Image (tube, rainbow, N blue to C red):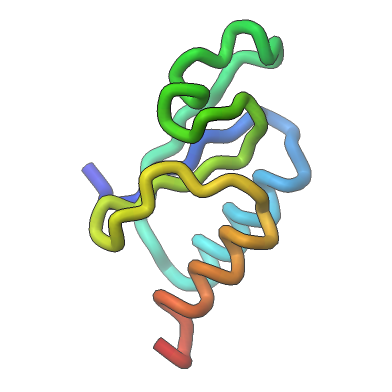
Length: 84
């Protein structure tokens, strides 16, 4: 099991942006696909307090449920990128 988990929705362009950064950095991660209906996204709501995706969990860096693709990409670059 990887330290990073990505909650995502199939076909979501924001999720694809985050997955692209994860792949670029060569990071292993677990994927959790959420239902298309926001009303059925209990698991991601428990993690992040909201039902939007993508949401990132990084146990190694105490990230419990980071939303917003731009914020996630920035975090990944700062934490795992060349500058890290």
